[in-house]
Length: 119
Image (cartoon, rainbow, N blue to C red):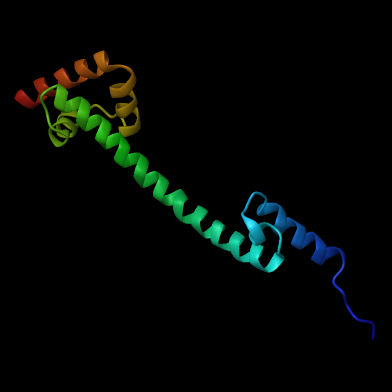
């Protein structure tokens, strides 16, 4: 029985892994065994950080909204409560974008919220 050296399929699988490690430092980009470990770890980090990314962006939006609302004389929680009372359904991403790029309209929105809270 002839010895199986692992031809086309094995070479293709190894080349795929080594292509994924292009740009890695030292043996991680050259040696298959080390490269496999590096790729596995990188894919784990990528999976985890796709979730973390969503958390961090929501946190950034809340920080931006809070800063803009404080300038208008409210707190973040008061502002969000006022939006619900005014039946304004804008998500935090849009609110943060408005606060960052269009402060005049955000200030008008904050004034509307103040009126609803006072009433």
